Image 1 (cartoon, one colour):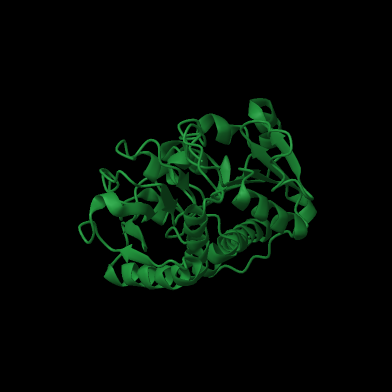
Image 2: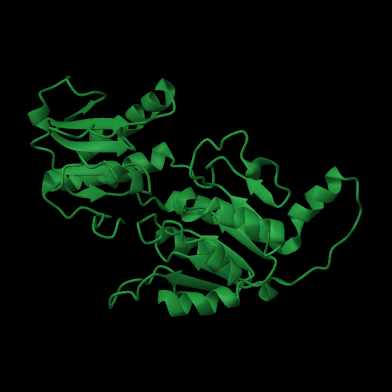
Amino acid sequence: MPMNILLAGSFDDEAEHRQWAAALDAALRPALPGGHRLLSARGEVPDETIAAAIVANPPPGSLQGLPQLRLIQSLWAGVDRLLADATLPPGVPVARMVDPMMNEAMAETALWAVLALHRGFFTYARQQAAGRWQPLAQRRADELPVLVLGAGQMGGTVARRLAANGYPVTVWRRQAPAAGAGQAAVNAVHEVHGPDGLGTALAGAQVLLNLLPLTPETRGLINARLLAALPRGAGLVNLARGAHVLDADLLAALDAGQIGHAVLDVFSTEPLPADHRYWQHPQVSVLPHAAAMTDARTAAAIAAANIAALAAGRPIANLVQRATGY
């Protein structure tokens, strides 16, 4: 009997929804020899026949009342919005998207941002706008320590890419890894954990790069106290979630020169409101949540592999621990 799979999400438009549906349908066909039906909306089949849901930040309540639901597969790497839905079925496993291609795209953006901060390219852009010709002193890469917050798949990939380009890299995780775990970020970089490790690492970092998951413990982590612990003039790169940063604290640190420049890809409100100070601040570079977009071609294959594992009774990859939020 074909497996009924619900595709639920807040897509930008109908064209994006069709793109995902086509990519998922093509990936599921060889993965499920017994057949499948990919449903674009509830009501196409009885709710009690839906076995899995593939989701992209679905509206709250979208997955209520599905008694046979056995897996929720997210198309996005971050699952904070999904887990914030109080109606999410409590006993159903949730898997997040871990796509090596997305990790590499994030590493490309991180390397660009660190290089631009290192070589003063943001300053040169301001000088061009002012018609000013002024070469800057040139530092070596090994003179620019980088602290990466987050030691997961993306954090590890980013850390290794930066280290391969000559930067001294430290990776911070909130807690010490369990025995045999947490090896994603350790090759060629230094790893620290806990409050003490963070304090020491901040004091020596010229660039702070955030790739943490958003949880109650990390919300607002980048605040006045943390920013003050960095060397004066350090750079900030936030590629994780806007809610990690207290905007008023960052703007105050920028105005005071404590933070020399901030590269921001994510914001508490998206799209970023037209009247937000970030748009016009000379020490801020704004990206439209574009540091690493999910590629439907590769992500569909990863989602299909987990659906196939569900059908065959095999272990599901990249399951979320709801207690920790990632």
